[in-house]
Length: 328
Image (cartoon, rainbow, N blue to C red):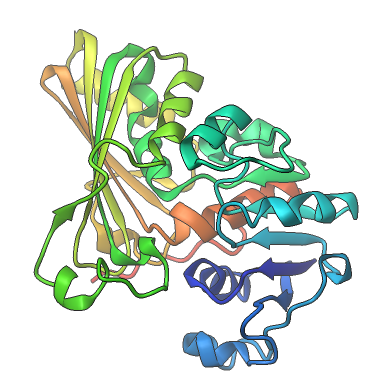
């Protein structure tokens, strides 16, 4: 199965290649970059030396020959590729935000006009597996909404309010240097940002509603001095009290058949480099604290994208994704 990665020079693109070189069926045959055409991949992704001899290229969209294309490009860029690739029978997984939300919500949230909108499955397989199976196109969720939604999903319909507090590693900001991600500003430091206005809140609200909940949803992220990972604390305020054993059983039952969701104490290092989401809960009656840990570049991006590809193509859902986390 031939794979093209559109926008392969960034962290998400590099992670797609790292994971796909171990996939039993997929072969990356095209990795694009407008600025780096002709450059060997391993000059930008040195950890891939010996695993691929590909060079970046910059083909016209109609010249891309693949069975599946991953769009690892920023929002507004993905919409310029999606329709053309689909029209040629290429399945697409979009890692940008362009197709995660209804058109009006997207345009309000991102402040842009969508030029080629169509509805698409929202790719958290644990909640939307049926829509993703055999799909031609899947919108890969944002990193924060993935960890947050998985933390709250089993209790969503019992809640009147959900408050998400997330701690994220610096790689979530991408590979373009900035004052925010400059080492002296990040190291030995923790800081909140976009306290009430983060764009991913729209996805979180969408998924809580999908879970048949009318709960109000709030979200504040914090930047912490680690490379990878998101630790999310969900404060779930219930309409009626639930005791610890009842809540714990609810979570264990909800995720019983989910390969990538593990009920255990969440630690960033335990999921680092893996597609797993670790979750635990503790109840004090009317408030349940649910905590999740994911790798923002894997379950929060490229790993989940491959999980969706597997579903789209009739493969085992965990193909290429069975590696353990890198603790310590």
